[in-house]
Structure formats: C-alpha cells, structure tokens
Image 1: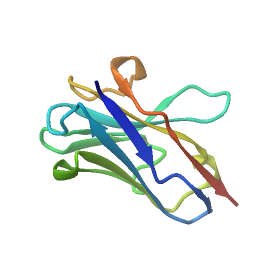
Image 2: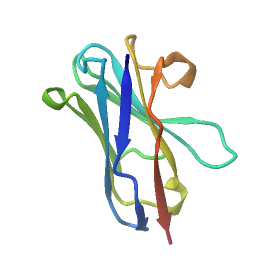
Image 3: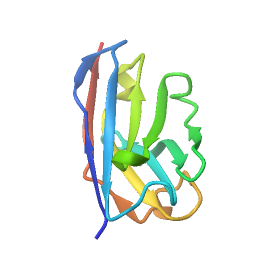
Image 4: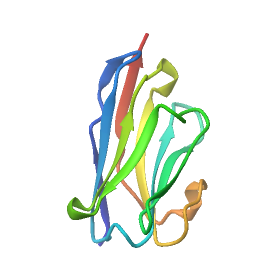
Length: 123
C-alpha cells in the first residue's frame, strides 16, 4: 500500500521561505515521477514541480521558476519542495503525487496522492 505523507506547510509572510517534505512508503523513490501540485480555493489543481526520480530531471510551472526547487533523498525515500520568495498568490493546499511513468503535469496521470499540507502567505 502506497502512502505519501506531506509536511512542512505553515503561515509565513511574503518573501519568506518554507520546505515541504513528502515521505513515501510502499513506493520507492528512484523508480518513477514525483510531483507537487497545488489547488487554491475554487481553482483547479495545478502542477507546481516534478522530478523524474530515476535521473533527477525536473520541471517547474512558469509561476514558480527561480523561486521553488524540488529535490529527492533516496535514502530517506523523501521528496522536498523548497519554497522561497513566497508571494500571497502561492497560498494554497500543496499535494504530493507519484506514479511509475514519466513526469506529467496532468493530475489524472498520477496514481498516488498525499493528503496535502497548507501554505498560507500573508502580504
């Protein structure tokens, strides 16, 4: 049984930083794609960043390029999302997702999801 557990969400002021963690069990990092999505209230879920854990290649949404960094720690079976220079529009629930195939920005392509962690950025 695959479980993804996110942590690290918090309330911060604009310009601040956070590090989100996604610890996987039942799923081995290094064998597929893991990604972070976010879903602001009354909006669709959008891909923020993804990492092809086989070789570490990444993708980012244009809105977070240069501010967010996704990384992996195979020993801890954990993927991280470093959030920097946070803006109020980054406020959202952030979800970790995984699947065996190549990285995709489409939520429907992902088989496994965490429960989410809330990030709130105040101006």
